[in-house]
Image 1 (cartoon, helix red, strand yellow):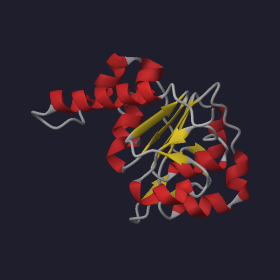
Image 2 (cartoon, rainbow, N blue to C red):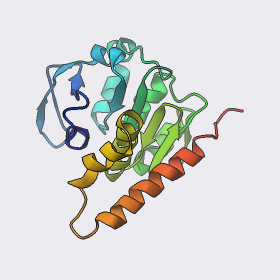
Image 3 (cartoon, rainbow, N blue to C red):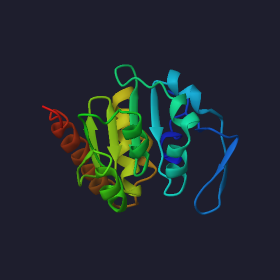
Length: 189
C-alpha cells in the first residue's frame, strides 16, 4: 500500500510504523520503519497491512495489541487481508461486517467476525479489503475520504494499465460505490 498512498506527497504524510526498527516480509525483504506503532494513535488514518506469518505473532504479543488506542470516531482505520485480525482483536469490528483474504475467511469467522465475500467492506470510518489487489480499493477509499475524488484519481492514474484506464476506473468507482451503499447496514441490530 506504501507504493499507492505514497504517490501523494504534498497533501499528507505517509509513514511505515512498526514495533521494531525494521521488519522482514514473508518473502525476505527487509523494510525499515519510519516510526513506532504508538504514533498510529495520533494519526488521521491507520492502515494495517497483511502478514500471513507476522499477524499471528503480533496478535500473541500483548505489548503490540496494548499499544493501540485507536478511535474510529476520530480516525479512518483500514486493513488489507490478515490485517483485519488486528482490527478484530482491538474490538473495532464489533457489530461491523468485514472482509479479508479468502484463505483467511474461516479463521476470521471463528473470532466472531461477520466476514463478507467482497473486495472492500466499509462500515463508518473502518474499511477492510480482501485480497492483495484490493489494496487499490482501500487506498482509493482513504484518498477520497481525506482528499477528495480528484486526488484519488491522481493517486491511481500511474498504476492503471495502459489502454485500460477507463475499465479500471469503472471497476474502482463501482467497488467504492458498492461498499458505500452496503455501509449503511450493520452486523448488530
